[in-house]
Image 1: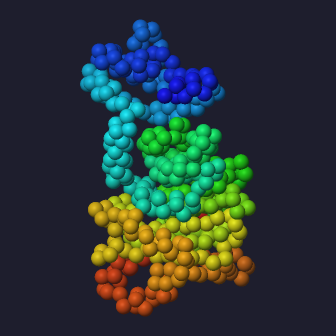
Image 2 (image 1 turned 90 degrees about the horizontal axis):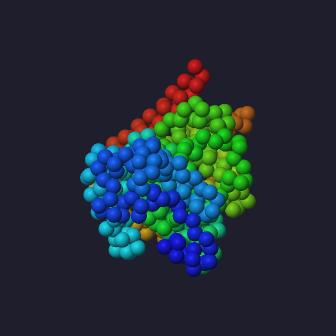
Length: 460
């Protein structure tokens, strides 16, 4: 298809792959290479290739691909995908049968592509259900859609997710921007200049590439590696973007080399706070940058380093909205309550609007079998425009939240605020509700103790 487009445009076309590594060279013929010869061609660094010549095996060739500057940036994508990929098939004959089945899929058929997309979505869900380690909590689709719609990225802006996981935010942003790409020039901007991501884990990195390719992005710009590996002070204007959407990992711990990339008085064991600093640093200044970030509950009330980082957020950015999510939204990974922070670079924070998302009607919390739905956010979506205070919404002064000691140093910044209009209802809680609240507070205390433990370890 791209060869046809090049002909129509009167431009030269360069094959991504050289023979005999193209699909039609070794896979298309159902009676082609099979058995041990097929396994050798796929797995070995050097082998007898299907055309009878000796050269690099398929996976070795794909891992070594590099862009040659002739519009073949997708070679870098292929190389990145195959960097850590291994063939686990042990029978070349069974593998040939699988290849023959894949050959029957018509990738130009919308019906076949939709089926493939549904299979991929099921695979993503299964992987997410098995996740939860190292703070990898995947964001429910209704939350992703809400965050993207509220930031409303425009074509010509760059959207970044520095911890993109399987690419949920970037895929949603692509769909959002695609509606604006109604000319050839605009489609080129969408394809080449609109989306950036980073991911440190190999499997989510691979799935993010596949996710974005299936959505229609020809060459996903996803860096493999920990986004925190760069020294914060060295991130300059060229590295800044207009829009950041992210659910960075939380609850994990980074090695000493990563912590050294941050100011000494801003180093913390909480990964979410490190990513929050990175996101603040990577936003375009002068009112051109805006962000929506998922953070765990402990970030809101944490003192010490957490307080200094939150003071930076309030004094250097406009934290205009905090959405407080109930327990269970991130089930089955965790029951920890989470929050959505919306901020931009229009100036220091004046007032902060809070919205407390209610638990599902008739139940105490969301769960894996009864997850959050798009319809559950209708009240939040309506309030976003009106900003009317009520049982679920209230407003506070941002500067008033920063507490300082006699020397003027930040002592505390508590964003863990209750709705004053809901106090009467809270005073009449049932015993079960009181127990649930105590359990939640215990999680918060454990998070603080973890922070203290890390500080003590650093000083020893």
